Length: 211
Picture 1 (tube, rainbow, N blue to C red):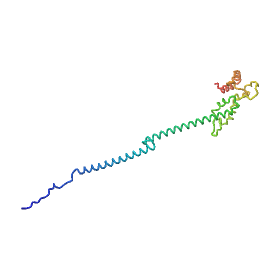
Picture 2: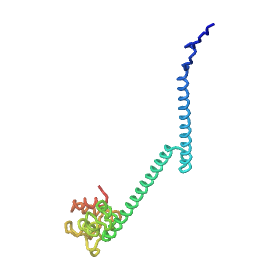
Picture 3: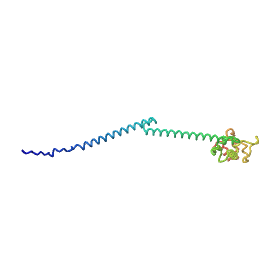
Picture 4: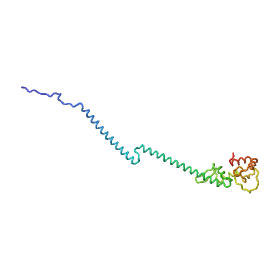
């Protein structure tokens, strides 16, 4: 009786399953997803920590709100600074005007109406950094004297009273008041001066504020 030889069938040999590559891919994706999740958690935690520290230090939870607050404070500071500069300039202007007026009035002691002299010269007056007042580039005293010399009717009479009215053109008008000025108003003198010296009459009217 002969022994029968048994041979293994090729079908009996095991081969890898076709699902193995898909399983490996899923494991990789799961691993990657876990890493990304941990990274996000770490970033969220860091952001929360930063927000907490920022709020504790500044009272703001975001950099944007902090920047807006800083810009607003800067604008308010600039506004206060500008206002302070304006106020300082106004105060300096008032001081300069007062100093100019005091200097001109002090120099106008020989004028009938020092205030009128000041009004006539104020537009040309200036004050230097050391407080020196000039009028048209001249010292106040010199400028006032020149004005009174040019317009003698603005000056106080310096001759003896009762000397009679001078003739027009005599150059002695400094001895007489301006009859168009308030307090010195005199129709008779106005008529006389207007007849004898119309140019002088016009100057006196202008000095008294008449057009």
